[in-house]
Image 1: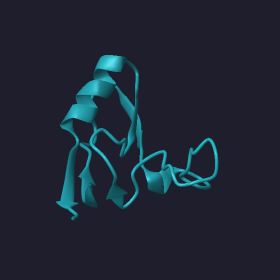
Image 2 (image 1 turned 90 degrees about the vertical axis):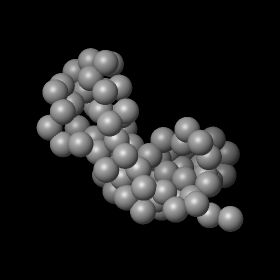
Image 3 (image 1 turned 180 degrees about the vertical axis):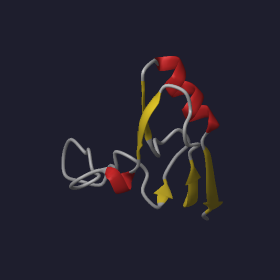
Image 4 (image 1 turned 60 degrees about the horizontal axis):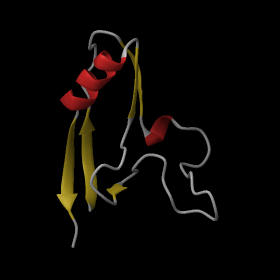
Amino acid sequence: HGRIRALNIPDGMPGVVRTITPADTPGENDIAPIGSGEAMLADGVVEHMGQAMAIVVARTRDEALRCALAARPEIEPLP
């Protein structure tokens, strides 16, 4: 796990309509089915490999995947 220092998502990629980060979500960033504590998108700290940090909205799946693969997070490892 680690602290998210930056999430660099390229602007203006073909077909990409919008990217959504925790800062864009209204209300709580929590999707726990019981209680709380499960973030929809990693916010400040990523807890495990594969945890979502952003959502890409695009015209096609391939365009969304290209944008997601071009994203470059900067993560500081935590003990």
